[in-house]
Length: 91
View: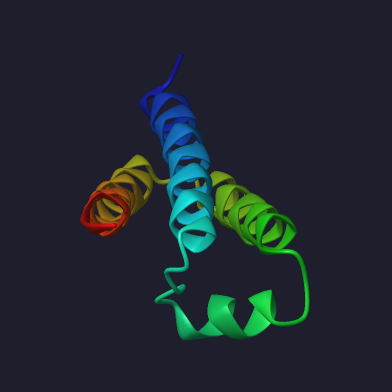
């Protein structure tokens, strides 16, 4: 298994965690901080929107095939998920 494949698997796990934490925060009445996603949520189911956007992100990272970019994207999502958890914790 290559470093890129491992990095993609980690990225996919982080995407699932982002969907879960975002959905939990939204159910608590919190709002989406990404303005593009927030606008799309007005027109379509938030989970469906997030899944579609995240599938596109996974595909893009697979297509670029650069483990350093994929690992950088993973780090970004660690920060995003941490922020989501902070928002959830504040109730």
